[in-house]
Length: 100
Image (cartoon, rainbow, N blue to C red; front, side, top):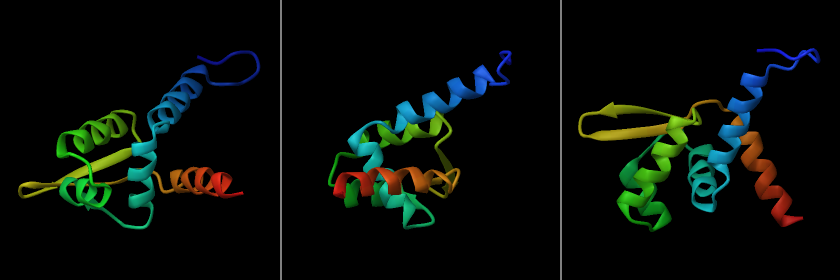
């Protein structure tokens, strides 16, 4: 549905929902890890971040549901990666803004 202004409200809502899914310190940390790597398994993610497996899985599921991450099963392992590499620019901006 488009308003007279030419804005696609559905697209804007989807974008806002993606941003909301990112707006958590642990999810930003996950995205920062994945920014520098092609893919990581759940085990690698929770080991790097020193969190429980269930906590990591919950955050990964939220990011996946909102279209931020994609996953691929390889045997017993599930590997996650950033769905759109352009999201890395958002993560870079967030990190950079905290430093300055």
